[in-house]
Image (cartoon, rainbow, N blue to C red; front, side, top):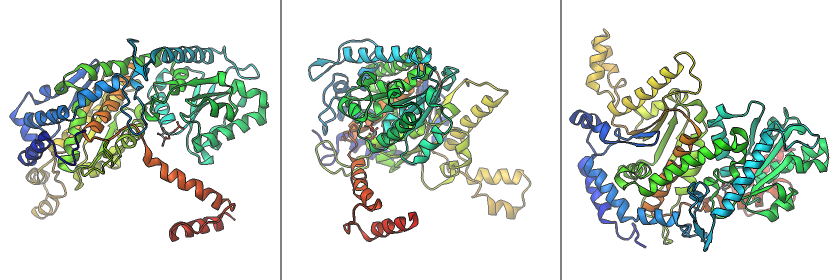
Length: 548
Ligand code: F6P
């Protein structure tokens, strides 16, 4: 395989020279020079529109970026993923979250076996169960309708379901509430369980491996809470499992008939389309869950078929690479202007950072270029009043994705118009900025003294030329949300290919887990080790003293 380390590709070198040519170009000049810039650099896939015109590029840069994508084999690797090749090389697995929403149902093979029949079987089981719970056919042990659905999981077994459930809250059935327990902190269980009635509570234990200590510990606590109230026989009516690991599910004490299966070819952070989506299906109904799949499928088709120059995930990925590897910008911000999307940044953090936070390439070499950026974000307008100061005037540049629905699910007074005016103002302000001369003129116009003007003009100036994408849709509906999530999945995929890393393992989370297993018995007083560094030793000692 071609390595960027050993021999920078032709288009990589071209981009280095494009960067020298282009780095000082101001976006406000590009807009002034070309009144069609926005129209030229706006793409739509169904009802999702990406305006990427407020980015620091021109046609020359874009051509070099798409050349890079071609040279790196983005198209062939994409096809390999869709064909079920084992592109997760370190784990020797296919990467088939795309099969979970393959609405055409055309066969997709992993290890020579068509995976679609098993996927369809689980979808049918999810449909039946979610309908039965929603309409009271599947009842609790004492015959009452289940009203509180508690998803117990962490990482991909939590962030996807919680993000989608919250995003589609408007679609929830009136008499069903969903809760999410992820953190091992006992407070998470305590605060959730304290208001729940065991007779009407369903626990959904979501874990791909069924070995994750946080999830199993939380599930054990919840199981005890239920059994203390209703007895051991009640478990079958109040516990279901979503997993790839039947043996561990049984060992935990959940009836395998209550298990919804998925498979190794589905990565944890790509799993909300699988059985892991059961909480979503119960909350919003299976028809809406299917619309979510439809939306993702529509984006898959676009990703598979659109030329790179007009391919939404590819364009977003390439602009990210441009900033990361040529401008040296290693952070990225996502700001949805919709209260219901408030968990999207947290979801994208795992998707992006667990996928592309890697420093060894697919050939086993340490990379000599930077890979995945740090992602952060939050719901607009809240974050305008926290970290946006840095986005506008900080010394670091942070590219931003603004996500906006034109219509809110809750059109109250002029709230949404105000919200919309804010998001548009933010991207305009980041792009345009305000020169010192402009700030000076404004201060003078406001009647400030010469002294005030001269002391304030730089503080009041904005360098501008700060990039952003705007993703616009009509309303956050299941189909649109499916498209949006798949868009980011494919963006991350394309970047992984360009950086020649495997986006589908997560070995970086292992060391901490391993060490925690050593430290636990020491905290419990069951073991004593001198093998830690002096800081860790001292902290263990101090914690033990404080807990006495
Ligand atoms: O954080 C590591 C990780 O393996 C994630 O990739 C995964 O989503 C999460 O833990 C939970 O894993 P599981 O679903 O197996 O409990």
